[in-house]
Amino acid sequence: MSEVNVAPQESLQQTCLYSAHVALQAKMSPFAGFMMPIQYNGITQEHLAVRQKVGMFDVSHMGEIFVKGPEAEAFINHIFTNEIRGFEPGKVLYGMMCYPNGGTVDDLLVYREYLANHFLLVVNAANIAKDFAWIQEQAQGFDCKLDNASDRIGQIAVQGPEAEKTIIEVLGYKEAADLAFYTFCDVEYNGERLILSRTGYTGEDGFELYTTPENIVEIWDKLLKAGVQPCGLGCRDTLRFEAGLPLYGDELSPEISPVMAGLGMFCKYDKDFIGKEALLDQKAGNLARKLVGIEIEDKAIPRAGYPVETPEGEEVGVVTTGYHSISLDKSICFALVDKAYAALDTPLCIRIRKKVFPGKVVKKRFYQTNYKK
Amino acid sequence: MSKILEGLKYSESHEWVKVEGNIAVIGVSDFAQAEMGDITYVDMPDVDDAVEAGEEFGALESVKASSELISPVSGTVVEVNEALEDAPEMVNEDAYGAWIIKVEMADASELDALMDAAAYKAQIGE
Image (cartoon, rainbow over all chains, first blue to last red):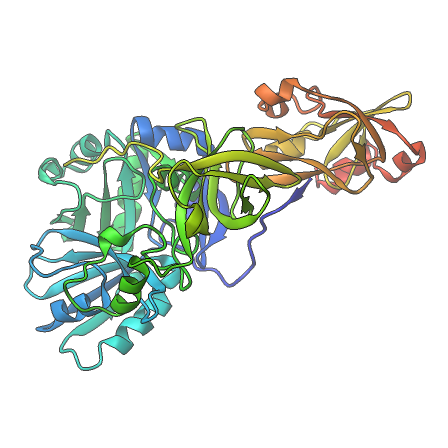
């Protein structure tokens, strides 16, 4: 046997919960420049805990950038594909930042804070430095201040059908019951600010908590003692994949635009933003490839990088993420394919090592999500 | 600490071989199954396929990763463990019971390049 996917060694950061992971004997691995827990008890067990009860993730590696000032709204709307005008304090909006050619800088959440002209951008860990440099460069000429607070804020995601009950009973935040999906409120922990956000990356109901690293360590411990299953990045990926959610680096990149990734609903064209012209052009049909879902009729697992072929054997695409889905017991993947083969039910095959497995194009949202409306 | 059976031969890539006359019964070690985690699929060759020492003959898949299976000997596949198609978890449960393929060896002297239990134990640091 030989490991196929070996992560490169680099100088690695640790989150505030690193010692907690080591104490739990988590399997650790480098991810996005951080030493992160991949699994504690097994990916399947952790995945099912989130689908059926509740699980928690250390997502302190994510980046937090505050933007404030009289022109903060105009500035964010200039770099963000979604429309933040008319979007109220306490709401969270998903979208992307694009390059002028439509390629994706990152996908992110924008929080409109309760203080006027204050926003929080939550970006991917691997992209913090790149994003902050990009944002600083674009902010020239806008009256706003930028603060990369990534090192001062830790984050825990509590996800699953029992997430609300857990937040209320273990942490005492009754406010949780009143939050709809993609809204947040400010509460306190040890007298310090904690952002309680009803968001997540699993396809289930859940919360993301942002506060100081010291508070995060205490909160993790409380949740653990209350019996909440710690969950690693292994099941974070299987969960987000089943829910049809993209991962930057796999389904979005400088080469993969939001339109190619099928995320056009998060791009609003009745305003100006960087990359708009290129995305409009792609939307009109000028794009080479599109992201699709493919289901194959076998238990073999399509992995990132495996070729996608027509039944006649012509290579027309590549797998970006694939699993034997834990919730659905099917082998499914996301793949970037020539747009001529992107229609639902198109027969396509995946070459897995020496064999070719027939399948067809299916909807990318493999799993019915359970968000609180 | 993982289980290592006396009387088997082991490869550096964690396959074990049990010699039965001119037939090599091949599986993966307990150490290898533990490293992989929950195995969800075993990709196996077909009967009559040729395999070559040091070359890939299939793969183990866990949720997260896939690992190639490397044949410790050259020869012809005479039997594959079809039970693993429906129950790949047998590799996790009993790595030495869950054989993967049986190979009629072309050159039994290739076995000399493999490790015995003590040498394998030293390799995996146990």
